[in-house]
Figure 1 (cartoon, rainbow, N blue to C red):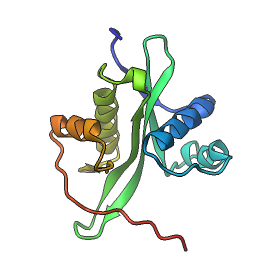
Figure 2: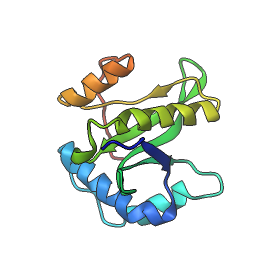
Figure 3: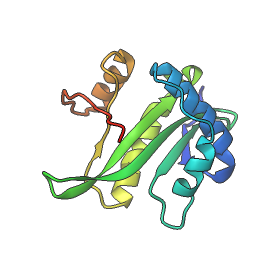
Length: 152
């Protein structure tokens, strides 16, 4: 890829490709498959008048969607302030190493600034050395923690 990275907000017509990328991401992270109907569950969250979720897409040189970053606003009780949580950042394997990850994270930082948020937080599996090296090159700080999930 020798073109300038293109990052843009997701549109309703992007949902089928976004869902494909989500399933690739799930497999990459060795997670359990998710139930069908993801596009139907995401659409009202992404495209409402007051969305609760924002997705930025990265396009390859021919305009194909090859990656995404999904974000939502969260609240830090200790800081008594909201922040932008980047829940997912994923690039298809062939799209890695061409500046699209940096472009997506820059887009996420812009989104945080637009929303008046002072920081972005995210996590990555401790085995994902490529992602860890990438985030370290960005100058991001990391803190060791475990993430728990509790079905209720």
